[in-house]
Amino acid sequence: MTVTQSLTDFVANTDDAELPAWSLHEAKRTLLNLLAVSLSGSQSEGANPLLHWVQGEAAAGNATVIGTGLRTSPGNAALVNGFLGHLQDYDDTHFPTVLHPTAPIWPAVLAAAETSATTGARTLAAFVLGAETACRVAMSVHPWHYDAGWHITGTAGVFGAAAGAGRVLGLDSEALTRALSTAGTLAGGVREVFGSQAKPLHAGHAAETGMRAAVWAQAGFTGADDIIGGRRGFWAVLSPNGHSEEALLGDLGGHWELRMNGLKPYANGVVSHPIQDAVIELRNRHSLEPEQVEAIEARVHPLVLELMNRAEPRRGLEGKFSFQHCAAAALVDGAGHDAQFSDAKVSDPLISSVRAKVSATVDADVAEDEVYLAITLSGGERVETHVEHATGSPDNPMSDEALKAKYVALAGEVFAPERVEQLFDAVWGLDEAPDVSEVTRLMAG
Image (cartoon, rainbow, N blue to C red):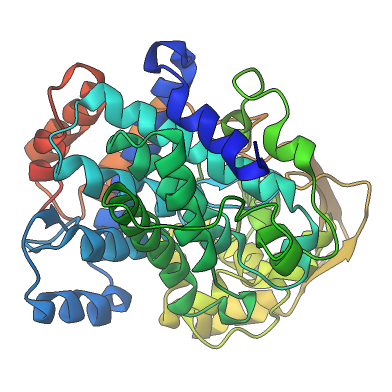
């Protein structure tokens, strides 16, 4: 078999009962997290262009757009829901690739399941296998692909969306190979657009493309036998400086990359999370006020400066990719929710004054979820801390209780408490549900 066929054979032929129990529990957690951040995102001004567009499409109303009264085609729903899921950069992240698995995959799986009366248990299993596909594709090109400028959520996410939707539709390995081929040839997204609405569009495009590729494959649409490993396939064209077949195919069903996925406590680029943890810890421990602070200095993983070195962000979305703004907002507000990344917060004089005092140096020995941070005070005193594993990282995961608190806070921006609880219960009991209709009904808004 080709490289791609080996992967699709695993996805198509793994029995639901073979999946580890923790993976199905994690699928529920990721769905709850996606719904929370998407509901909040649906109320954002940044969502309006796509919501107005989909409303004007007059497409067949078979699938639900999260947090709205809109029903549209499955492809459009996957696109908009994927966009909403990544709009605030509050969704989950796979370590070390910084792939965001849920935003491309759950919207594709939900759209396919909503239109095919798939059981809740099978839907959860489809997400697990789709997410594992995306994470393994991402690992197979890490770090060369991302370093070249590709946004891995869009490029690897499209394979996971096709695999997850294809699993819902019951595609065999041959049809699933064709689905991944169609999805893979449409993979895209470059990092230059970070800090704009085009970044979450990558997740939406991946969800839509993967879902449609699965539907088309079910109808007989043809594709290449090895879109990943072929002579002019994904590896050769989008990661010419390196790839790993072992990372893609090694110990399938034994080793799970999904275990390396983490849920976010802050609504910004994940490599800044150790800095925010550290600043908030020192702020609270020493009762620090912004006027006391002379300097904030961090020793960080190389990705911090690669991804988030924006000393003077111009708008809220850019602030999500400024470690300087993340640290300043953490000191001033003691938080890093979406409210800390509005246009007003980015231009706030107090936060701006603190932002100018933030610096970082790269240390290759510092892990992606780690930081050494010191704050120098006006009297010359220096307070320090070391965050070994940031909150929400695989080695310091968000608890179910903390996840529910995040969900309740964000979903409560849209729904009354009773409905917030009903949707929570529907997700938590999805493995026993005959289909996903209760979840999609309650998430509609």
